[in-house]
Image (tube, rainbow, N blue to C red; front, side):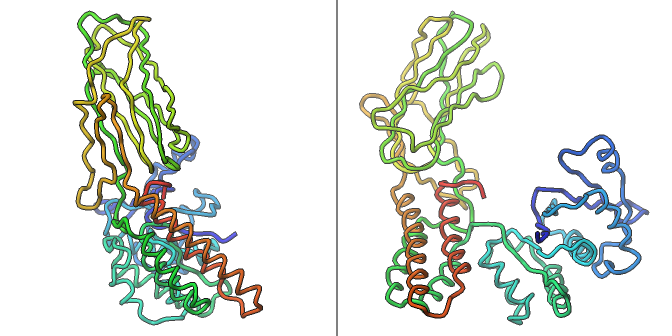
Length: 420
């Protein structure tokens, strides 16, 4: 199995401390360590230095101690806080050199998508020369991660590959920016099947139509909350809150509600798969405790998916007695966007004449996702036809991957698959 270093990931944090008068040192943290491991991890590990180029020298013994503690992971993550610290970038290069030369690692993965990583890998494999231009272009929209240290690392990888039995590679593990993948895919289809190109272009346009790719989707989607006051002298004891939820045209995402009393405690969450909702609706419930000090409940509703979801008026029973609730949805307040400059709200809420809340997702979200999947199917049809005709085999796996990169970015953007 190829072993990979993932840069700026959360799998393992390697934090660099600068100790006055003592130079640089490591402090290492890892999940699941036993007592002995934890004691070792808490120790400061003196470094010979942070500058690259020490991997093959006697100074590598400091990194050997770290690697001995880490064992033999197939994937090793290097974290940083804050971003843009050049010393940490240099140390990452030094450690990667050590891992390649002493531990058999073969891949350096960055928080960029695979289409963009392929450009850097082309340089590392000697297929192009313009590394400074690639890094300076900021294709991935996160230039804060990359400085001269990245160029130095890529140059080292390129030089290493000139004589290496097993060349090292650059990979990407993000899925936010599909435009380059779309451009490369259309260029490939132009060579394979020009008749399919117009359809592919239309599907790409529909896939990327929602915009805001390369930044962040609104991961809260539609979420709104309201304070529900309880009547004076309400009973105490086990409380049972019910809410009727209906769905129309919901094929992906999650829907549900959260509730918590004002006298403390965390949210109690009722989360549903949106695709399971029906127009006939169903009643969903949560149970909580009501104390004398409970003066109100905080209720939040959410919809993260396509189609339309309707929330009926909630009902509340405490100690087997119905507690009347006001028209709570009239006071409902949507949660604000976390980063308004980088996000957009794709949902429109409205109150019906019956006092229900109806949340409508922008239909462009579902159309975008459908177009991306249709593009994958078109690519597969073209590749099968090409193979059946006996034509020279294209880079089929890579072309499929380009189409999949578009779908993954659309899934991320539309919250069909919010986990990157």
